Length: 194
Image (cartoon, rainbow, N blue to C red; front, side, top):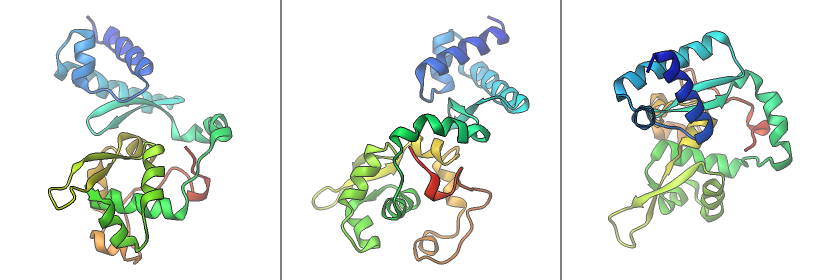
């Protein structure tokens, strides 16, 4: 199969999946090898960017997903306006703790925030921004929480490792001003919705 045909197969599969797929998964679908799939996906990603299309091919932690181009988010956002769910300051604070400390337990979150985190953790799980990632080998076996691919997609990150570029975690959580490099959220926090 020619590379141009592979691009069409990958595009159709990614669109139909509605979630991120690895080069290995796409290679299996197209009956080719993962290295060739990765090369074709990289070319597709560059082509979408060069053409400034309404959709982009976005790499998420080694997998690829079709996403709306952030330039057109104000228009796409109108589709979601009816079911908009905003992140309150408490949810954002909890999400930041999980993102920078992951994997982290609810008692650890509560120790940092100084308040009960049940509602915030449950709401973030409902929004698909965090998930359970096993249990800590400690008394009571508390659940460990980590961020999801949806978190990465929403904040325009390729992997959670991009967060590690920030100043040390204690500085971020202490409220001191810090920089996260080139990262900026897609919209002001009061306008973000899911």
